[in-house]
Every structure is written in structure tokens, then in C-alpha cells.
Image (tube, rainbow, N blue to C red):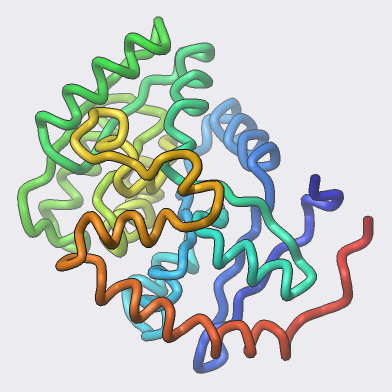
Length: 263
């Protein structure tokens, strides 16, 4: 168990930039979310993995969106390993594993939720399953965006205004990076009382339209390989780039590491 939840992990990027994993444990994250929503405040939550780090190497809208996220957690095992190398250990908090506890929390507190992303079929199936699991859960909006949505365009702004009008206090963004992080950033202005949580394929896992790796595969940190074998055409290049990035990233973290965290 981590002893000091106030220490952030600063992950150095090329060019002198960095990304901060500022919420190192799931307990700390849930406490922050509860406080924000109880006080009527929204937030943007990003779930950092190595693919995001590859994308963040270049300046642009994605890096700008990440800098404006209110909370960032470690979604991938390489981020956890790098945090240990930096003497600032953080826990693994996958975005897809936040849906159930947050829906449970929303049902208990009467906070309506919204889904933005994926397809109408997936949203309907996932919504029905989550309503079954968490009686009292209010789903205020289910929005399947058109193919090729520009997250910086006016159409995306209209979708976020729908979330605002719906009264949702939590919105699960299931569009993948960088779209979901950019939408979360814009949502902080267009729907300021709503918490935007980037979850990738999380709703597809719940709906059964995508299969997540078995627990034993995740336990040995090989989910990436399981996913790549299942869809090599789409994912092989992504994971090759991640693998090529990791050695230089580890060296950069090692050089910048601080003293060990106090116990």
C-alpha cells in the first residue's frame, strides 16, 4: 500500500515537457471525485498509458488537453513501473475498471450519468447492464457520435451541450485517445458541473462487444500482447512504437528521479 498519496509522479517527455500522475491511488481518486461532485464541481479525468505517452511526445492539442486535466491516473503497467523507477510509486488504475465503482457511487448519491462515444447498440446494452447492476442508477444521456467526429469542432461542442442540458453529473467518454481527452477538456467549460471520465473501450467490455483479456493475462501484465494478437492490423504498430519508446523513457526517468518516498 502506498503511504503518501500527496506525492505526484512527474513523467518527463522529450523537449522538456512532462505529464503528471497526480492521483497515485484509487482510494485517493474516489475521494477527490466524491468531494468534487458533492460540492457541485466537475472535473476531467485522464487515464495515462504508454500509447498516450507516445502521442504526447509531439506538441499539439492532445498535450494541451492533458495539461488541463484535473486528475491523471496510471492506466498501464509501464507507467506504474516507471513511477517506481522514479521513486514516486503509483497504483494501477485502469479507466475501464472505474465504470462500476463510479456507477455504484452515482446510484447511491442520485448523480445522473451520461455515456458519450462508441455506438448506439453498445451504449444501450451497457446502459441496461449497468442499470441492472446498480438499481437507482439514472442514465441521463446516451450519445453515440458520428464517425470521424472532430473533437475540436462545433459538432463536438453540440454533443457536450447535450450532456450539460441532460443534467448528468458524470460522463463516461468512450472514444479513445486523443478525442476523449480533448472532449473532457472542452467539457470543463461547456458542462462545468459534470465530471468527465475517459474510459476507452470500457463500455464495450460491459456490453460484450469487445472481450477484455482474462484476469490471469492481466495479472502477468500481458494484456497488451493479448489485445495485439486479437487485432494485429490495428494494434501491432501502436505497441511497436510503445516498445521502442520505453527504453529512452526509462533512462529519462532514471536521470530525473528524486529521493525515495517517505514510508
